[in-house]
Amino acid sequence: MSSPKILLTGATGYVGGTVLHRLLNSSAPSLQHLKVSVLVRGEDRADQLVRAYGAHRVSPILFRDYDETELIEKLASQHDIVINAGSGFHPASAEAMVQGLSQRATATTDANTRPWMLHTSGCSNVSDRPLTGQAFPDREMHDAEGTTVYDFEKSENEREWYPQRAAELAVLGHPASQSSEVGALSIQAPCIFGEGEGLFQRAGLMVPIMMRYVVEKGYGFQLGDGTGVIDYVHVADLADLYVLCVRDVVERAGANLPRGASGIVFPTSGRVYMKDIAQGCLDAAFAAGVLPRRGEADELTMAMTPARKFIREVDLHEAATTTAGNLVVAEVGWAGHRATRGTVARERLGWQPTRCAEAWARDFGDELRHVVAGKRVVTIDSCIAEKEVLPVPDGVVGAGSVRV
Ligand SMILES: NC(=O)c1ccc[n+]([C@@H]2O[C@H](COP(=O)([O-])OP(=O)(O)OC[C@H]3O[C@@H](n4cnc5c(N)ncnc54)[C@H](OP(=O)(O)O)[C@@H]3O)[C@@H](O)[C@H]2O)c1
Image 1 (cartoon, protein in one colour):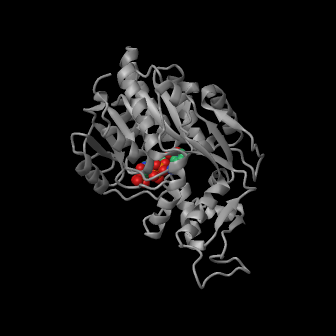
Image 2: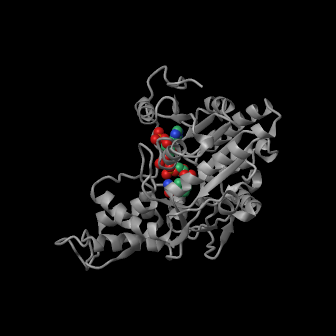
Image 3: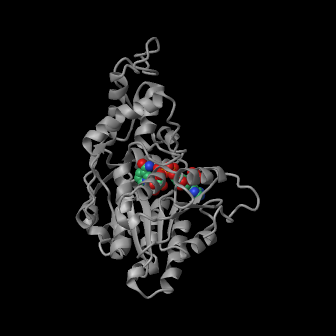
């Protein structure tokens, strides 16, 4: 597929911003003349994207939000590849993207020009519910058994609907994806860390949120029995996987990409217990002399800046203060067991993450510096698509800075 038309969501976010940056800076000959349509909120940010990358590389389209599914479907129908790298928590828009691509698919019978949907999701989809449901501390999912993961998610969602899982299932289970009319895969990310490379949100979630908590309170927190577990991946390595996927579509018609019910990919480069995230933040803060804060230590109540490193057990409601009040996200996020073993990206696409255990350990010091410098105002509301809708001036909604 030469000169594919690509539509990307999430260009203002952590994942999407980094994916856009890496796509446009790839040295792969097949990606040299890419121009990416980016669906964004806020004319000012659309302008900044154009200033940074040039009008020949990015083409912003303004929209109000993901609820504009008719517009999203229409836009998808005008593109060959949709990279849904914004919030993975909005099933209707994700479905509209595949629906739009399926219209493009019916316009062509050539498998070499099959449209592709590269979706973004998260490993909380396969988490247990150790506090309000049953704990499965030893469960591990493996992306080489993609259909097993897909079937598991389907039955979990019948038991309890979870928006991020529903969006992933809507993408992979869409009739056009099941029939391979549209190639659809989902990159189901674990904890993403490291400095993003986009223009706007450059911070991850878990480590920055815990680090800010630790610096503010003087201690870390733990939800559950401390066995909660998650894998991790550096944001740049993750973005490189999207680039490899796009290259596979452009260079080999997506021959190496898993799709449909077996289209879940786990991009992982290490694993950590949740309590060790709190511990890593405390270690960094104590090593740098940021903690304990002198004169405020109160070892009797442990209320503020204890003299020694301390991790406090919190209940679900308290943990949810870090997740925009969302109790389910708090439980799966801070207490869940969601070990995901990823081999598909390595074996089928030659993905080789280079920022592994050492980079993970170094990240705590980096995040500490950002928090202390006041650069980390991180909330989870945009990630879970619960951020307040930005006002868009009359006549701008759906009109776009540049029409596709
Ligand atoms: N960050 C992680 O550690 C992590 C881990 C695992 C999986 N994931 C997956 O990756 C996804 C993206 O994460 P992220 O960290 O990149 O999130 P983020 O930095 O908060 O970015 C979210 C993006 O989605 C857009 N968005 C959110 N709600 C929207 C709405 N209602 N309508 C239109 N646009 C909306 C945001 O646009 P605005 O800038 O206009 O708000 C932004 O571009 C997550 O939702 C999740 O599925 C993330």
